[in-house]
Length: 266
Image (cartoon, rainbow, N blue to C red):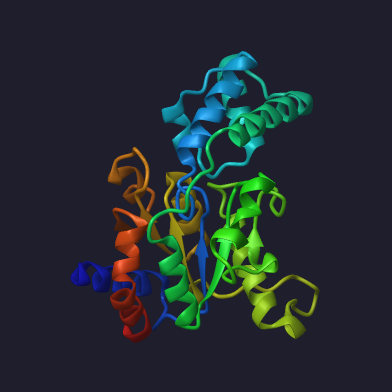
């Protein structure tokens, strides 16, 4: 595994033209990474769509993970009706989906996630959240399950972006919020454009093909964890730099991974 880590890091630096990593933040997706919540999301998406006359299988719901709710609804509406859903339809479907989700047993934290976050923070790296979720019930669980790890100003949610994953906007917004955190006095350029951290200042931890696609497009080194019923190729084909079979496996490998990130140079 160590050989794969070193090879992936060197390839990233070579391809992107960086001499080394200068790691300041680690951006974590939430559903399927920090919480074992995707089975609940897929169930509630399937039944909400079915109730209102659309078809979205539980298996397909996994592949849409990371999109905004409106984006998922419109893909299905375009496919089945040839046009996008109205705002009223989007609101009705997403509200029903949320109600079904909230009736299901609470999603448990992903094994290994809290231990990994503690290691990340102890190493001086700032953890961030970048999620397509707009469900406040799940967002509110972060502090209860991962106390002291995340700051509200370092979270990117569906409320912060116009375009969801696979568009790189959520992770670019993460780089922007990271810059504002470290340089609050100088967070915009001379014409008022928000500044961003350099991509080599961060890493991404993702579990969904669309999320990997978004992270890779933002230029950030992307670690995929396959926590769902999808083939590894679905993540690697989107450009993931490294792949782990679980959050626990990534947690166990973190000391070696961090050492390589901090010492690799070109």
